[in-house]
Structures are given as structure tokens and as C-alpha cells.
Image (cartoon, rainbow, N blue to C red; front, side, top):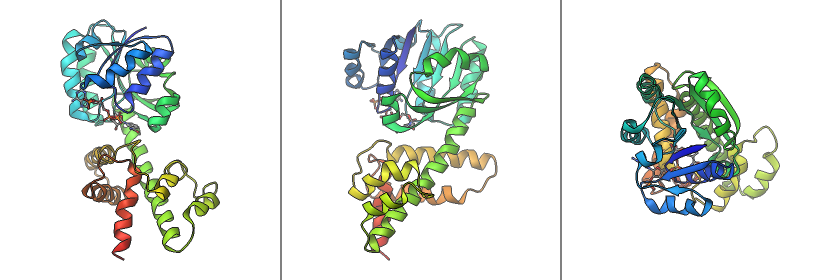
Length: 288
Ligand code: NAP
């Protein structure tokens, strides 16, 4: 299939690469051209603008950071979209914005799915992402063969926006599991234990989690290199907060984690991985 791919950052580049390996023809566009050029070696055609990626493609993928970024890309490609094309937004953004975009494109006969992911950079490289899709059931079935090279668990969650709402639920669980892992390891270290041994001892038991297994060793090593930026989880928790307010929901754990990640940001960790929340905890521990 002829595919357009817009946004080749940490996640977008390996995802586009998997579609190339699955045999699709992929035209890629990235705002900073160098990041897209790297995909030429894998067989991608690098184009100079977003409409160039979208024009005539059976499916157009977006993988950019935030709601205004998706809105601006959609505004740029809308004039070249034609009836029967499918647009799949895999960024994590506000559910409400997705509902509006889906409704507008539907009037032009263009299919639209919000299909955010979890599983991180490694999941994107390995094609093992969890994909949570919202949109028309027929559009989802058309998209499924294109999503299969990208993810292991691919679920249609319901109407437009349902994929994003599911992803936001995921982020609440992820943020609090990370805090649990970081606090447990800090407590172990400050109590005089070897945190690596504690991780080994408790990681396979009731305390086990993806966060503990994957980010625990990095927390112990104070390796804050990014898989998922602090600035992006702050964005996600802001989206959760907005959606929770709309539903008049109080989420105390969310408030705690928003302030933890804001502290990590204030300490200069916005472009580090989410495990750098441990640096904020370290600073608090010194104040004890
Ligand atoms: P990233 O590395 O910052 O990549 C974002 C890409 O979008 C970059 O190529 C960037 O271009 C482009 N972009 C930014 N603003 C744009 C705009 N206004 N118009 C056009 N292009 C724009 O981020 P990422 O980690 O790949 O994350 C992408 C999305 O996936 C986010 O919504 C994130 O929350 C979600 N996500 C990330 C992870 C993860 O582990 N990283 C996991 C699950 C979901 P430039 O190169 O010019 O900056």
C-alpha cells in the first residue's frame, strides 16, 4: 500500500520502518528533515512537506507530540485529502480534539482513527506496541493490516476519542506504577540495602510491574536517558486532568504525579526519560 507518514521522532521513525519492512511504500515527512532522511536507507521516499506525504496515500499516519501539533498537521493536509482515504493519528492527544477532527473529515468521506500507543521506543522497534483505537468500526478493520506490523495487542475501543481516553487511563496507571517503583528503590537504598538485589528479590512477585522491570535498573544506575520524555508525560497528565475535570472526577494520584513530574522538570529533566522522577525523589529525600 501507498502510505504517508508524518512525524519521525523517537516513536515515528521505528514505526515507519516497520511498515517499510512489511512491504509498504512509505513517503515520510518530518519538520526537521534530517530525522526523516535516515529512513531513506530503509527504502522510504522523503518528501518536503506534510501534503506531499498525504496526497494520494491509501493511509496517512501522524506521530507528533501534542493536540495543537495534530491540529496543525491536519489543517495542512486537509486540502489534499480525498474521499476514501484513511488518516490514523497515533500521537497521544486530547480525546475531544479527535472527536472534532473525525467528524470534520467524515463529512469529506475521509476515514479517521485515533490510535495512540503504549510500549515505548523498544515496543516501536520490535512491533510490540499496545494500540488503542477509536473511530468507525469499518475504518478500524481497514486499518488493522497496517497496524499489525506495529503492535501486538490492537483493540478497537469504540467511537472517535475512545482510543485516546483509553491511553489516558493507561498513563494514570503508568505514572503511579513508576512512582511506586522509584519510592521502593529509594527506600531500599536509603535503608542500607543493595537496590539491585531488592529489585531481583521483589520484581517477580506481587510488586512486579513493567515500570519496575524496565525502568528500575535505570533508576538504580541513575541512567536518565530518554525513552519517554518527562515533558511528554507532563503533557499526558495535563490531558488526563482536563478530561477528568470535564467528567467532574477527582484523581488524587494524578495530582501527586503531576507535581512529581513538574519537580523533575524544574530540576532540568524535561528531556530526560520518565525514570528521572527518581531524581526529584532523591532531592526530597535529602530534605528529610
Ligand atoms: P518526539 O521524538 O519528540 O517526536 C515528535 C515528532 O513530531 C518529531 O519528529 C517532531 O519534529 C514532530 N513535530 C513536533 N511538532 C510538530 C508540528 N507542530 N508539526 C509537525 N511535526 C511536528 O516524540 P515521540 O516520543 O516520538 O512521541 C510522539 C507521540 O507518541 C507523542 O504524542 C507521545 O506522547 C506518544 N508516545 C511516545 C512514547 C515514547 O515512549 N516516546 C510512547 C507512547 C506514546 P522535529 O523533529 O522537527 O522536532
